[in-house]
Image (cartoon, rainbow, N blue to C red; front, side, top):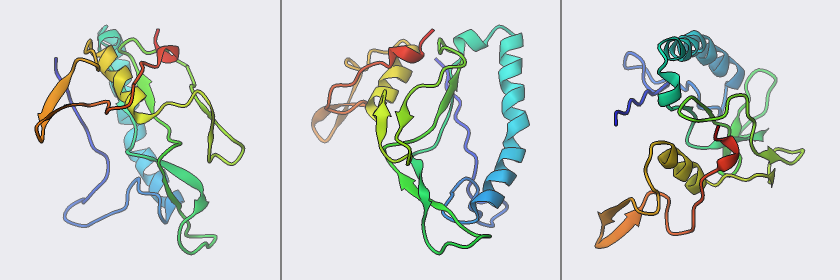
Length: 164
């Protein structure tokens, strides 16, 4: 099994930049980053599909958390951002047995609480492992004298509603 992980953001030429970090200057940052990565990501998916590799390749695009709809810090017309949101986040997946064109999960009118089809991180991880052919309940690693699971101690389930 091979893995490739790509990062978007962080220091560029020794100069820090905020990239996808939406605390401030969100419109400028996200516009710049979307223009920078949109075509390469589309080309990757198209290439994988043309080569017949997309059905066996799981592509995941996401961050480490979501964003609230309200501002963090000073609010101006030119410079505003959003705070971290650990419960509501957006991620997309393609190939690797994922059902294309599927939207899963729903928040309330304020995008604050999950009201339908919540996917805790442990379930998201269990789903990824399942698609890679790994049983999340049996995969453990030793840590501080205990066998730990990537999906944690609470029961995790595979999100079947996104599988083809």
